[in-house]
Length: 240
Ligand code: 6PG
Image (cartoon, rainbow, N blue to C red; front, side, top):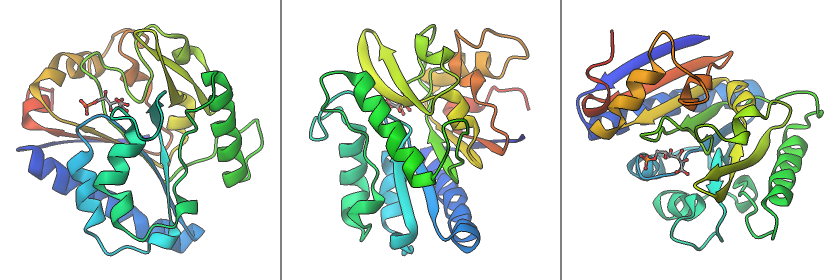
């Protein structure tokens, strides 16, 4: 694993750096594999980044978008990560609808949706059940409780190692989430973290010793590249 930590002066610099880093992965992926695959994070931090990506002139037909996690709500619900990404980015560019790989969230049982998303991913990557296919980029945020995707502290989702997708649990509300082994299979994992409220969690995630199930972002140790991009409000006190 190659780990890089960058602290940018403010949110706009963080967004600009995150954009540059993502763009640097697009062409090589297309040259080598004919496509670029990225899993999006939700929440509020990535919205300006998605707006910035939408302003780029990219080979949209070769770009495939997934979600690293999704709230268990319909796609038109205000909490939907899909809705946020569509409004900020996906509905503003000529990305073919078949390149937008949405998380099914309309089944009565979230476990059925989780299995359907997994099946779709395996078919897309032509991946056998024993392996973890590699996305080019998995974008992640981090909560102030050190969760990432929908891998929340002390939840069952943290102990799922044999699947790509599982059902997360936030305060009793189901989520659909990448498992951490699937995240770790990515060629590049990029955390984009902003705000002073993330400081305590970052201190624990970057501590030499701390409990992974209390601070789930510690579980993200990809075979490929690990990038932590933060604004100064979040990361200025981290040990160099
Ligand atoms: C979600 C996200 C989640 C998010 C963190 C940080 O569905 O909420 O995927 O993991 O990245 O909670 O959220 P903010 O960027 O809003 O602080």
